[in-house]
Length: 205
Image (cartoon, rainbow, N blue to C red; front, side):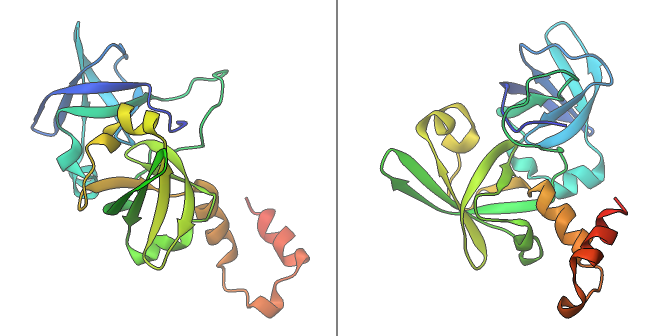
């Protein structure tokens, strides 16, 4: 489990034979989970100054691999008793989004991100969404995209400073939206939905 708050920018040392090696201040142990650009990966090797994670072919097919170079977002998995900040993030990337438009908006920047139509139902106004591991609040949902308003601090200290129109990004939609949608899509007609039915569905989880 993660919070979507980037703890450090890791430097990519190499990416060869499915192994991504990073240099960072953070010093994980073998077997630790760490989110790299929002994808939960497992540490398989460590050295004095670096650590290595392994990416399966499935992960590489899903993720925006063009962003796994130079610097990447890093967030270690939460530990029991950690202070909870940000949003609830699983590190499970749903799909790729595309930066559709970037507009200045006073002291902030609006990023418009398009995504596959089948995932738009999980994007909710004022809900959360995770972009390359950065958990943010959705300001507006449009026909085929959504709008984020990013403050200068976030732009300066994350990969948002490098995003351009057409950049692909890893997207993780709101976990609660996914669960609720799947809980209530079970074939009940609207006219049959009652609080008794809701209670029965909730009792299954």
